[in-house]
Length: 351
Image (tube, rainbow, N blue to C red; front, side):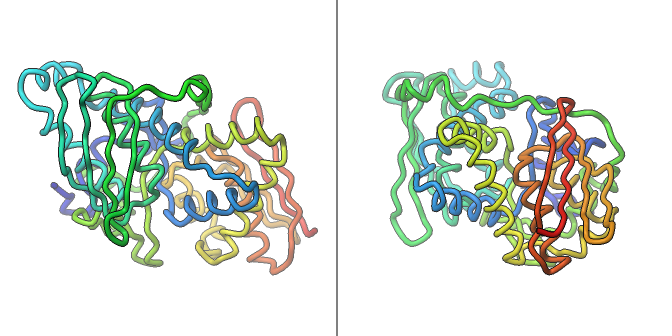
């Protein structure tokens, strides 16, 4: 896979995505499809904490939501002409290309094990993956991509054959009817802003990607300064899961999510120096696709943040609360508002 000689990022990654002035990342061929670049531990810890706090497994919801999101994503990057050609030649080149894309996005060490696609009920694809970023999410990704390629609804299963290594098989099947109409996506605001990341002269992506290591064989992205693993994914699939939980559990899910993110931040996964420097914090959020920082202010013992085009806003609220408690070394009380136009305002004061 080709990488940029200047920043080292995979060209397939920077070529398929755009970082916009509004602090968002979008798919180049489908600008309505938002993406985020997030610490992998953030996904794992938050979902683990939510499962622990609500006493429910989220695996089935994660797989289904990721399946729908991946279908939307892959449907635009595999042109209809390519699909017609595949039907009379071979599906392997496209499947291998999608496997490569998954490695560039940090999903893990993916390999194609077996494939049978004749656009019939016996179709299946079997992949191997070592060190998956988030196994339920990866399973949903495989099912969604298979649906685009095969033209049929698909289900997915997995088994661990050795420590850290899983075989994931997706095959033609129907979806559970009770999930078909659930997990609806939100529409995000995407107004232009002043998030001006320096552009890499080699590939056109953010120059700051040079601060990350891309191990394409292992399918792992890591931030050099912290060693933390990173991953590219879409926020909509996570928002849909959280909305579904809110429908089942009521407003308590907002409190649970904010608390889960607060705990994660206080584990020391983020640098508090970044939030105290407005420019660094704006770049931090924009690189990750979380929105455009309009204002951040420390007044006495109050922290106030105003953000345009936010996604996963409850995690952002928990992020700000956690930063407050780390900086001021005391418990905080948070208030927040998500305006009809999409702006998020968060204010934290001493509890």
